[in-house]
Length: 349
Image 1 (cartoon, rainbow, N blue to C red):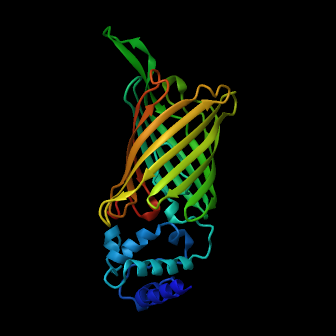
Image 2 (image 1 turned 120 degrees about the vertical axis):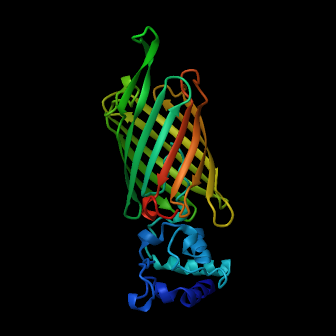
């Protein structure tokens, strides 16, 4: 209780003149700038960022994260413990505890679905490093609604080489290439349980038969993919993410189970610099009719924030087949991620 009282008093002394005693922002006629003030009682805004991001901006000022310089630096007025006490008080303005905290928005891995509901655009490209040639892209749109829910649409497209070569007009051997859409996916995810260190979600995806298996672009079958996802903070900067589910063909007998685990840790360049998140993912899948023939992959990868605001990110990795490597290709994978809720694509650089 004493810490809460101290946080309230410190907030009143350093923050309330602009942000208001109730967190809704001071009236425009009482401040000397035109920049809009955030409503700290709005859980959709206030719950999304982890405490350290709020404290960094409070300590070093708005420009340290690509925001307006009307947000001053309080690093000389308050120490880290005092800033945390202020943050603890700010957290009381959002009274709806159904909103998962931003600490649970763990780094996004290649392939493995997160448990946290998000607002993002993600462009992923995969290139076969051996075997039949393929360059497959996926443009993913994710939209959060309410405290726990997310919808998404994935649009895959690209070029893929068939395994059967044909005779070229000059007598040389050339392989057929297919180009076009893959299987469009529509998904829904809901966070079921969460606390300050763990989030557990359920989701399902529907794969539409818009691709063409003969051209190496999707399966061309209607499939449903229910799954469970878990995010767990480990030791402060470490994290574990798990996903498991099944892929079921609506009009056929195909049934596949899959399971994925991601281990990682986030490091920061200096106190306010880029965030680097090396990760290692283990992927498994098996036909439910013959689980003895499971396929396993290893995916080492690195995510890094690109801009000052840290809402535009790059991830680069490689998918290495651990089983049947003579018929399954190694893939180079890369994505660009834009967390559009935090600002425009060209904001905060």
